[in-house]
Amino acid sequence: MITYLRYPTYQLFLAALLGLVVTALLTPIWIKLLRKDGVGQVIRIDGPQQHLTKSGTPTMGGIIILFTVAAVYSMMASATMRSLIALLTLIACGFVGFVDDYSKVVKARSLGLKARSKILWQLMIAIFAGLAAVNFAGLETNVQIPLTHVIIPLGNPALKFSIGHVGIVVPFLYLALVFLIITATTNTVNLTDGLDGLAAGTVTITMLAYAGIAFRQGRLDLAIIAAAIGGASIGFLWFNSYPASIFMGDTGSLGLGGAIAILAILTKTELLLVFIGGIYVIEGLSVIAQVISYRWFKTRILKMAPIHHHFEMIGWSETQIMMRFWIISGILAGIGFGLYFMMATRGS
Picture 1: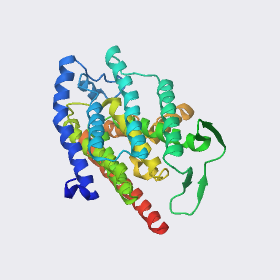
Picture 2 (picture 1 turned 120 degrees about the vertical axis):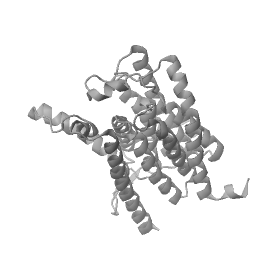
Picture 3 (picture 1 turned 45 degrees about the horizontal axis):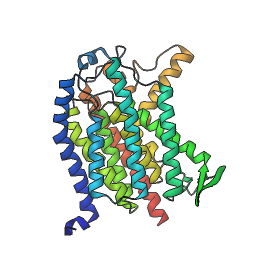
Picture 4 (picture 1 turned 180 degrees about the vertical axis):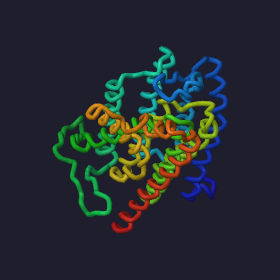
């Protein structure tokens, strides 16, 4: 091995750089192929009217991000059970997004898979990821409340059985938490991907935090995946920033959301995800609040949900919203990382 590749910090830097460069080189080629085949985004007619001009913009750019991350992982990371679970969850969630994107393109409509179908796919992914992490990667089923010594045990009730000589534990409560985290994160990242560059930028920020957390835990394999995703998101952002030449599609947003969720699970920062991925919590809550306010009180608290569309409707430009949401994301991710560091320092 080349001497400088023995240094973990250099490996993280190289993973991010490779992710950036490979994505930046492949995306223009992918855009040309998509335009040649007429694969373009179908815009919702009930969304902001100014977005109708984006109809036909190449989509499914998330395929390049997923391919790049897998390539960087195969070149640089050690194949551990945790890193394989993280990579496969990224790809599996991205595949669900690809099916959704493909159905939209073929049927030329803004709605793809039904919500129930998506949730069923996400349930299966959560079950397989959770079972693999607990049974084959040694993941604990306890969850710690940040800045406290309170531990919530989620290992019981559990079903235990054997397949051959392999014992399997099915911790129902913890699997329910894994399902909640994966479903909530994938769908809220998908909601955030409603403005040019918004999802790619916030994912980059979130992945920087998780690269730092995984590195602090001595899990270089997970840190390399997070760094590669962050770098690939920056490379994609070059073409996805306003005015976007390509969209990541559900392939990208669901895949990246799945990656954020599984990194929170594998680094045992499940509850800190509320801060580290705080911008997605805000986006999700804005939709929930809008639905509740209209159904219960017949009034809308936002001009349009998710909340980034509300700011569009009151006159903010896409670039203003993008930059300000990036700042908010950075602050929240910084708070989450700070809380983790305080917890880790106390425990050491």
